[in-house]
Image 1 (cartoon, one colour):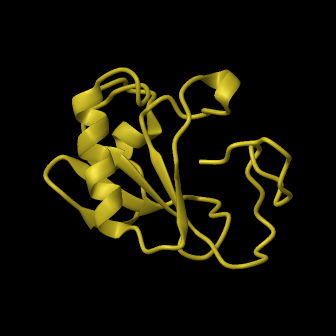
Image 2 (cartoon, one colour):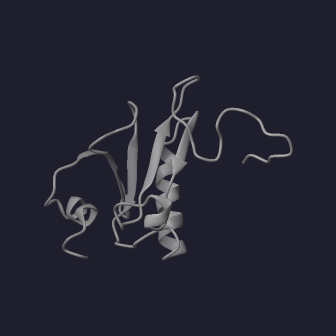
Image 3 (spheres, one colour):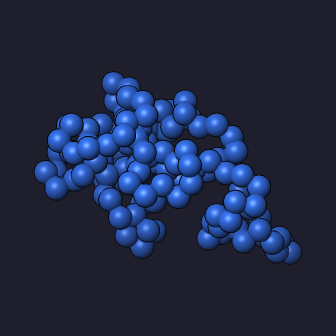
Length: 119
């Protein structure tokens, strides 16, 4: 566990967090600055930097997120500073969505583009 990792500190109980749910291998809590009501972070208890570092840990973390997710929502993770990752401990954002909530994703502006494919 990197001593400077705030998420490892939360897992260890040495940093405060509002825990939503705990599993043997994952933890869900409310971020310090939620973008909407119901925004939750899900992290593995084992330190891995991002989703690409250990696929098995990533799968465990997604399983935990899937147990909490209530559609409509986004489940989002970033890998690398250039992809907007700011805490280098794998984390999944569960972001509840509502029609016209004003949250925009960079790959979809709400307007269709001819020939574009959206996931």
